[in-house]
Length: 159
Image (cartoon, rainbow, N blue to C red; front, side, top):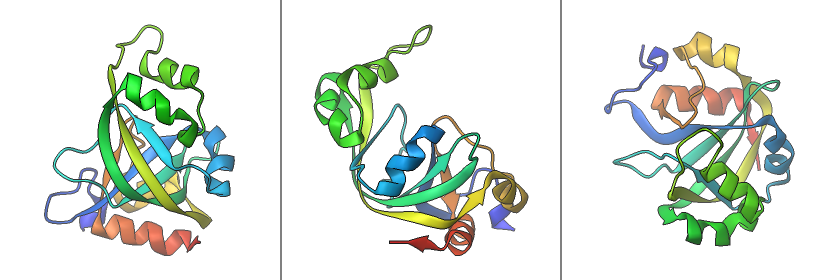
C-alpha cells in the first residue's frame, strides 16, 4: 500500500509536504496571520502546492495546512526583510540561520503562503505512524497522494 511508504515514490507523490514547527507556533497558525515560512531546506524538482504544519511535542500532530504561492531561495540579507511576515524578529531569523554549534546558512528558502486551514481534528503522530510509518523530519517530508488524502479526511480542515 503506497500510504505506508516512508519516502513516497515519484509515481504516488503529491505536491504536498509536511514541515515541522515548534509547538509555540500553534497559536499563530490558528490565527492565520503567517504569510511567510522560512526553512533551511526545500524540495528539489517540484514546488509544493500545500504545506502541512506538524506541531512538535507536546502536540505531536498535523494542526494546519496552507497553500504555497511561491518558493524562493533568498540570501539571508534579503530574507530578514520578510521576517515580520513570518512573525519573527530580524534577530530570531538570523539566529535560526546561524544556530550555536552548527553551520551558518547564508541563504534560506522562503515559502509565501496563504489560505491557512486549521485542523478541526489534529492528525496525530501515532495515526500517521500507523498509516505509513511517518517520523517527523527536521527539514520536510513529501506526502504520497494517499497520505495527503488520509490527513485531509481525518483533519477535517476548516477555512
